[in-house]
Length: 186
Image (cartoon, rainbow, N blue to C red):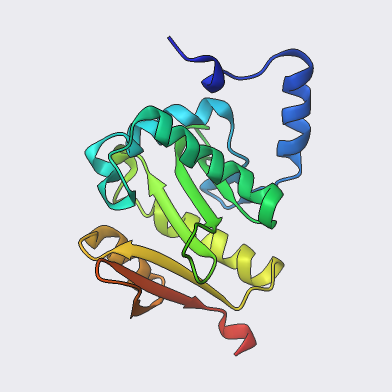
């Protein structure tokens, strides 16, 4: 049974939610669509964050705690003018994961973060989605830097940040910061 807060709205609330979602930029490549997160997307977010796969992102979380992370992913748009997208396959319309330009307490820069479902790891989806979000941050938002805050043991995310050309710095004892620089403004 899906709890009320994780159910898609109906009626007038549904129309209002759709109007808000329509304000979030949609990014499209040949393979991927980055669109506003929908309530229905929470199940995949929770699947990742409530499992051992969420261990490097503060998890595994309870479903309640995962909900608050999902809300943060979506609400950044209203609070900061940037936020999270759901990553969708253009052809199949399958939800693949999430990418975010976000801020959490303690962040020094806007963070570029990606998570994909286990079945979609190793397919360059995270790389492409991160490139799309980073291009939006630099070209549209005119940001000069982003950071990817990564647990020192998260080898997959470290590999992705390095593949994206980010430069490694130390954030604290367990977290590395990979800095993405907008070369166009340097």
